[in-house]
Amino acid sequence: MPVPGITVDTILRDHDDLQLILITGEAGLTNRINNAEINRPGLSLTGFFDFFANDRIQILGKGEWAYLNSLSEDKLHEITEKFFEFHLNCIIYTHGNEPQIPFVERAKSKGIPLFKTEIATHRFITLISQILDRALAPRTMRHGVLIEVFGIGTLLTGRSGVGKSETALELIERGHRLVADDMVEIRRLSESYLIGSCSDLLRHHMEIRGLGILNIKDLFGVGSVRDHKLIELIINLKEWEEQTSGEYERTGIEQSMEEILGVSVPYIEIPVKPGRNIPIIVETAAMNQRLRKMGKNSAKEFSNKLNTYIQQSAIETNPIKD
Image (tube, rainbow, N blue to C red):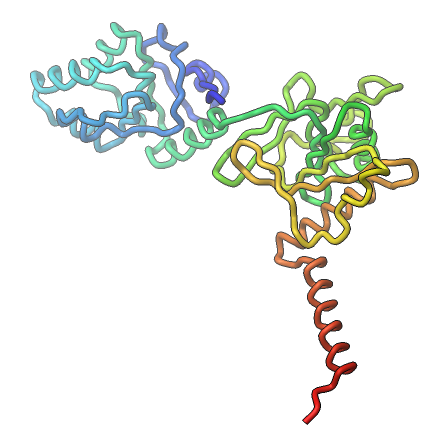
């Protein structure tokens, strides 16, 4: 799926911690950034523009600033002209350094946002990289309820009306925390991590048939909700079918997986029917997943004990004769 972009204006407006000061290039604040990597154009400023990563945010630290200041006026203008021949999203000077006048003039004429920040280069790169990683992460939407159960981000899925929200409500009453109800936004922050969250409009709200829309934060307190959570377990609630009841998992030795955005997540299918306490089963599944993360698999341990018992029983029944 396409990777969403972020505008330069969004970074400037929503992230005061970057301490960005716009010097010129207001016309380019709508430029979109689609690459989470940043670029320090030291080599390019020497005149070598092969492989110049112009689609990234350009960061000019102490080294680049000092090098440009060391150039003659003619050489500085020559490098500036070549540098601004490329399409650039924005340029940021760190350490509070003032951009060279030719850079300011060309940025203004080209409509390229030019900033400075008092933050040191390494620290600034760390901060803005975190922002870009979150904003540009591949994402998708899933119908379900995301809830934190004993620290495990648990995504409840299943057809509409199967009881996902009711199960989540019972879990919240037991002290667990709601992340998202109905539509869960899922982002892949690395090759093996998925973060689930909710839209600003729906955040902290839940729909319960017969009651309507509930504000969980107001009802149960601030400790009953959280804005995002790592997804570590998927539980699919499915109506019990007698003709397929023998197909449901009975041992749990092998763990099923479901892939979302290229990341495999442990998957469990729980049949739902009157009399089954689904919230307790979900709690138990979450605790069992915590044990698996620590390397403890109860089902495999039982299987090993059973195999050992069978082998010993066979030896006692048929002792080896000399």
